[in-house]
Image 1 (spheres, rainbow, N blue to C red):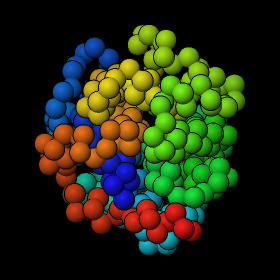
Image 2: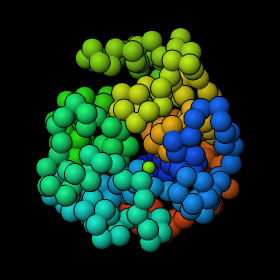
Image 3: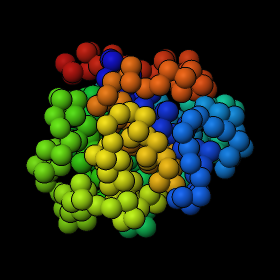
Image 4: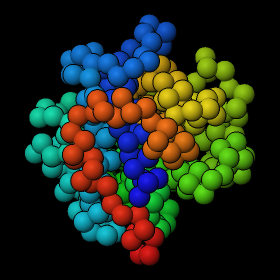
Length: 279
Ligand SMILES: [Mg+2]
């Protein structure tokens, strides 16, 4: 439970730190605290779709005791179309692929549909005994292209090794990935100028792992991610979940957690990871 709490709060904090500066150009701003009223004119501590869909996933696992694809899809629809799982009343910052998939009832399998929309919500699966094909099926509810599905599997695989206390450099060296992900092997020597923080799922995965490799505390990792700019909330969220696992819940600055909106919802959605490991 504690590591799940660390991963989920890490993700929500990263989302909330990056949300006010989403789409801003790297170097044109610098975030070091929880701010607000930026890109979406929302108060500090507001989190977005990344957190909403992660919480919906947690809540589904909590209630169903396993991965139930129909239940997951219903909860995602409730978030997008019926105001569930939100920081406040309004809806903002949903991805086009996610919208089209949930509207049409079928995940999108185009190369162009490889935004980071399934990667940003997949972390709860690191706490379940599920196979790669189940991880892929959860991605494919919205993002059904092989690249999106592999990105989710790589991310969960890395998260599980981090949960086991392994070192990220060693994990990356041992990784077996297909050609589009080959750069993950060279992250340690990659200069910041070559780290893209666009919404492309491979970029988000690379940028997040790069931030973790380059830093040595929760706040450093998440601030490095958010300050890469562009898709700053999702890069922050994807980094924050792993940084939470590595450094623990206590390492997340208390004032950042205190400022988060709708913490009651976050608390309600967390599931008991001890029960899940026996599924
Ligand atoms: Mg977002």
